[in-house]
Picture 1 (cartoon, rainbow, N blue to C red):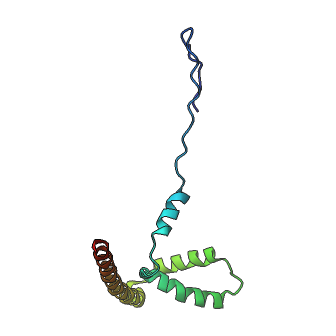
Picture 2 (cartoon, rainbow, N blue to C red):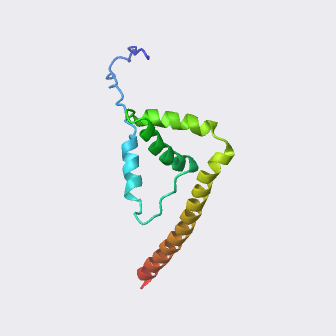
Picture 3 (cartoon, helix red, strand yellow):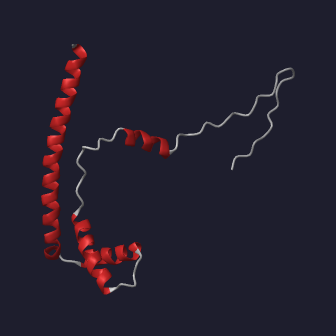
Length: 128
């Protein structure tokens, strides 16, 4: 904590006023800018293999333990299970994630081509 001391000022000069603190922009302002620029037509990234496992695990775990309602508790148990699984057990989820990732990359390349065409057509309209 800083201690503010009184500084002596020469006779005849007014005392300086305290310096006003400038607030830094909060994260909310930055998020609004990002959200304003989002394109709803842009493809969303697919989930990872763990999230496909989580979806399956959650269904079975809730059937076995209907009294557990907390998502954080289910997530912790799921994470422990995922860590103890062998690679052979995880392969099915990795395969699904790889397929979805390939679909996403194809959709993203199509999206970028459409966006580029749209940008080019807008630029040609500006010059006419």
